[in-house]
Amino acid sequence: MWRQVARLCLRRLALFVAVSVAGALAIGAAPGDPLADLALTGQASRAGVEAVRAARGLSDTPRDRIADALARLARLDLGDSTLHHQPVAPLVLPRLRRSLTLTVTALGLAWLLAAAAVLSQVAGRLPALGPLIGVGMAALQAIPDVVIAIAVLTILAGAGWTWGLGGQVTSAGMLGGSLVLAMVHLPTAWQHLHVALHARLGEPWMLGLRARGVPHRRRLWRHAVRASAAPLLAVAAVGFGTLLSAGLVVETLFGIPGLGAMMLDAMLARDVPLALGGVMASAAATLAILTLADILALRCDPRTQAAGGHA
Image 1 (tube, helix red, strand yellow):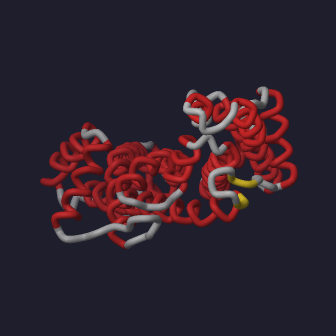
Image 2 (cartoon, rainbow, N blue to C red):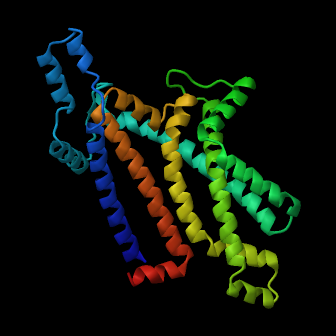
Image 3 (spheres, one colour):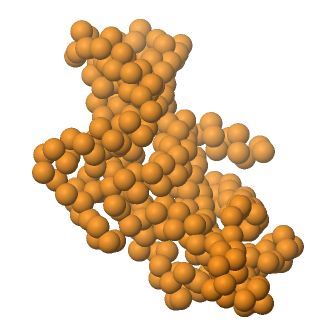
């Protein structure tokens, strides 16, 4: 198993390097030039503007951007922000922590609600609510994410909740953002969990346990849930990356000074080191969660270890 984990970590590391290089190229190729107005309005000479562009790396060729990104990775140094005039790492880490708190809370809430709904249906406790839950999940999935965010924002504002301004973090902002992201991911979590458990309960080995007289609750909790853990962990890990990306809109609406809002400001100001630092932090967090999910899947499902051992 440890060899599989080592190979998995090496593949994730190579993917992290590739994402960082691709992010550096995409940031450098982004349209717009915030320094062009300085020369047009006479606030700075053309030579001065070109000097600032060179200092910020805006005039670098794609080859130079790739070399700079690889050098930063090798030194574990993200450089200095041209917007805030200080090192990038102290700017990124607190915002990454807030974004991770928001994303993990929303992901956990979505899966808890989905598990409660599906397990109550499978256990037969609330048979009348089964169709209503399905219709509700379909309706929630059809509603645009922005509409959900505005609805939660309106409800919290009507209840007298306020959120931070000027970079302040409030419980209302974190609660509202977590609720929005949880509602966005809830239909996906419910659908995968519903399909996985029903598929496991209908498999021949589960029917054999039923023929032996194993109680339904024991078959559900001890066997079906455990057998479904590996694919559901993969779904949850992918959902983490999706919610981390969706946090850009949520953080902006609820005034959360997270990674998404920071990257938006960095892109508007063409702060290449800060934007690249945000890309690297987001990629590192997502790949770490994907790696953890794969390792847990190896522990939960012996068939995964066998497949990996022969790969």
